[in-house]
Amino acid sequence: MAPTKWFKKAVRDRPPYTLGWKKTQSTPVRRQNSLDSRPNNWKLDTRRLSAARALTAIANVTKDKRTKLLAKRDARHFFNLARS
Image (cartoon, rainbow, N blue to C red; front, side, top):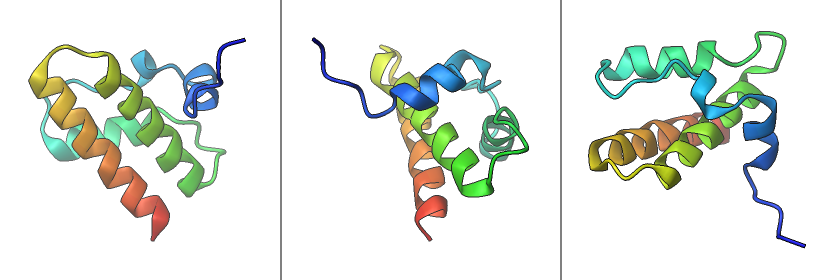
């Protein structure tokens, strides 16, 4: 049996392709779209963690360097907000 991935629940509940995130968008727009893609009835920290996990999943599977860099930055931003 394969080990469970730590981001499996976030990706199953809201797949990364539902983020509305594009590398061509400005940083505030990318982050707002990512957060807006999560259900509004979730707590803010839950939405931030879900977006961060989905962005980390994108960063882990892409071969495009710019996408990987931007997705990691945005994920780190949401992880830091959720932590504080």
